Image 1: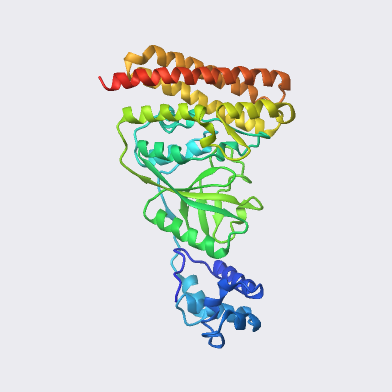
Image 2: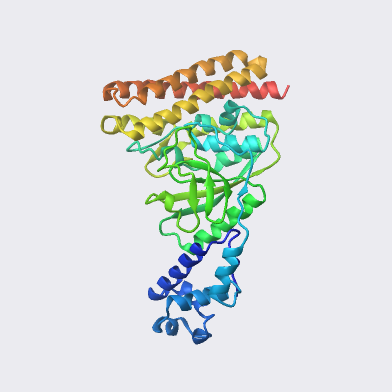
Length: 396
C-alpha cells in the first residue's frame, strides 16, 4: 500500500508526519501500524508485537518513505527538495469587506463566476438578509452557528453550490489535515474557489509548497483572527483557536429569478415562524433571538459579542431594505408595498446599529430591542402579503 504526496510537499511536513507516527507508536495507536509494516522487522506482525517492540525516528522515516514509494528517506527528501516551486493561484478572487464575512466570501465567489447579482440581491435571494441569531450569552459566535441547509439551497438558486468539507479542531490528526489539504489543493488546481471559517469566513486564493494564501476580509485586518497564510500540517497561524470548517464552491445553473425571490421570502417567513428548525442549542433565531438578547442585555449588553451581533444583523437588515427596493424597481406592480418594507427594514437596521453601542444603558437597550422585535414581527406579516401579491404578478 502506498500514499500519494501532497500537491506541494515539503520536507518540514514530512518530518512532522514521521514524528506523528512515532508518537502514535508510543501511544499504542493502531493508525501507525500499516506504515510500520514497511519495515522488515514488522512485516506481517500483529499490532501488539509492533507496540511491544522499540523503533526509532530514523526507522519511522524509512517506513514513511517506503509508504510514499521511495527507496529511502534521503531519496524522498531529495525529490521533495528538488521539486520545482511555484504558487498556484486563482486570479481575480477577492472579498467585499462586509461585516458579515460569509457574504463577503460569497460576493467574491459570485464575482469570480461572473454571476450578475447585486449585493442586496445576494443577501436577499440567499435569505441571509432575514437571519438574526443570538446566543443566550450574546456570544460573538452567533453569526456562524446555525443550520445552513436551507440557506445552501437558496445559494443554488443563485447559481452557487457550496460543499462542506468538514470541521477540524486542535485534535484533528496530521493525516486528517493532509487529506483535507490535498482536496483543497486539487480544487484550486482546477480553478474551484475554496474558503475556511475559523474566527471568520475567508477565501483561499492560492498555495505554494509551504501552505495556503488566505484572503483577509477587511481593509484593516485583525491578523490574529484572520491570518493571511495557513501553513500545511501545523495550521500554526490559528494559534490556540482551531475550530475551523472548510468549503468549496462550484457554479451551477441558477433558477428563474421569480422562483428565487419567492423561495427567499418563504425562508424569511420560516425563520420567524419555524425558528427552532434552524437554531442550535443555546442559540435562538427570529423571535427567540430577541428573547435571548433582551434577557441577556443587562449582563452582556456591553460586551464585544453584543457589539458584533448588532453590527452584523444591522448590516443584514440594511441589505433587506435595499433588496425590497430593488424588487419594487424591477416589478412596478409591487412598488408601494416594497417601499413600505424598505422603510420598515431600514428602521430595524438603524435600531440594531444603535444597540451596538456598548455605552448605551441596559434599560435603553432592552427597550429598543423590544421595539425592534415588534418591528420584525410586523415586517414578516407584511412579507406574507407581499409574497402573495408577487406570486399573483409572476403568474399573470
